[in-house]
Amino acid sequence: MIPTVLIARPLWPVLRRIAPFLAAEGYRVEEAPSWSRLVEAQLSCPELAGVFLGEHGEVGEEIVLLRRFRQREGAAGVPAILVGGMNALLRASKFRAAGADLVVPADLSPEILMERAAPLLHYGALYQSLFGSNRDLRERAMLDELTGLPDRRQFSLEVARHIEMARRIGRPLSCIIMDIDDFKKVNERYGHPEGDKVIRQIGTVVSRAKRTYDSVARLGGDEFGWLLVDADRQQAIQAADRIHGLVGESVFDAAPDPIRVTATFGVSSVSPGMDLSVDYLVGNADRALYWGKESGKNRVRFYPAMKAKIDAAADSYIS
Image (tube, rainbow, N blue to C red):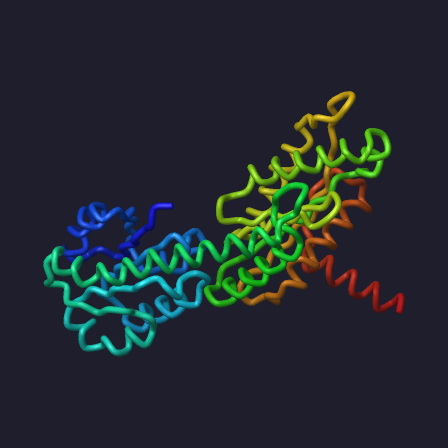
């Protein structure tokens, strides 16, 4: 993996001229118009060897973004080099307290800036290499043997991590739980080895449908989970509709004849101001799934707040 250096808000000439120097040292350069890139879910912190930040704006907002960046998984060892004018130099201690490793004046030449930044970038690339190796070892220990996807334990950890991120940066998060309809009949008719083939192929279909920064896991049996990062209710329903169609259109290899299956999908979402918890997000997706099974299978159901209130009232009446 080629280490990446992010240049956020390259308004100073030195930041616009440093890219060739970074490329010559073997770094891939990404530019972003603002510091908000630091907290976007799509930014892969484990691939970053360092970030250059062009300072020229609201200091309070910049400090908040820098602190949020430091709270992200994999960002602790990413060097942050802040380049600015007198405004930045006078507030260097505040920026360092928020997570900047180096604060330098914007009138440096790219050669001098590269000379000062090189040791930090080297450290960042080494840190991320070690971090990635340790993460790979942890993830391999929590993979489903049949499909090679993350297992339920790993999925739960991913949900918890992104719930916390959604809480901090105020972004929506959605979850899809899917279950193959009448899968017991597949095992009874074709045998468990052929049923396992179908499960593996379903896992492949779902994995290909997800975005690179989403998480898909086999939760057990013929049940799969899909965590959609920075996706609201409408986007999650559209994703579930899409995978619902893909599963229905797929032909799965099984002896003696290829077969078709259907699946039911439960969808839930959380957004800023709501109850941001693993139980709420995944629990509501599970409720939507069972609601879909009860209402005929082979469909997508979203568990809305109104449905939750109705169920809660019914439970209270029964008890």
